[in-house]
Image (cartoon, rainbow over all chains, first blue to last red; front, side, top):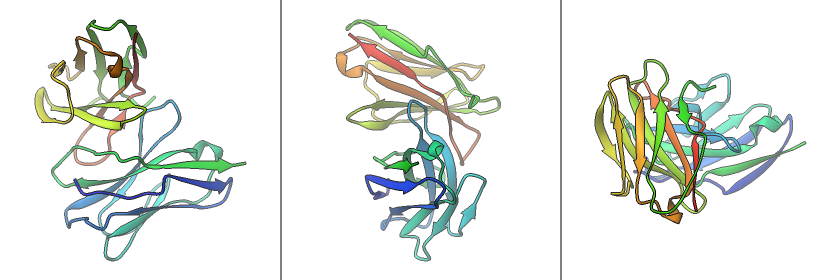
Length: 110
Length: 111
């Protein structure tokens, strides 16, 4: 599985946007970029995914670099409930397995 | 409620014992995945079943086994338990290529 690199931790103020970076320099053309998050004492939760174009949904936006070697998960207005570990995962089309890394622990400051 | 149901939520057992963890996938999802999360290893993929058939194996010990039944629920059997098997065990289901739905997990403590 191709590897992703994320900062171990980040902090952000409540009600401000948060940009969570992910590097995936060895990404191949068939790898989808997935983001999951895990709130304390809960199972991981799907956030968003994309292939080449930027994507938006009700939870977040995903900005993908033109060369696809990096991406950024954007939370437009962080709340305390967004405090979680965020995982950036590359998923090969046709391979249903998700390989989780260590993720980024996001702390929201009130 | 994610739609994926795992039972029991908590389990405490002694070393050497055998336990069974159960997972009911979200309605309509044919795929079930099992993950183990321990403090020092993070989330580790164990095994994937699709419509009753094993599709992929990850870092699953020989003491562990799983199956998926005709009604699509799945069971993870852990035997000859060791202290190091203490962890959170998550089940997830999916309908296809995108988006897993995870359950809330079973916390196993081996004493």
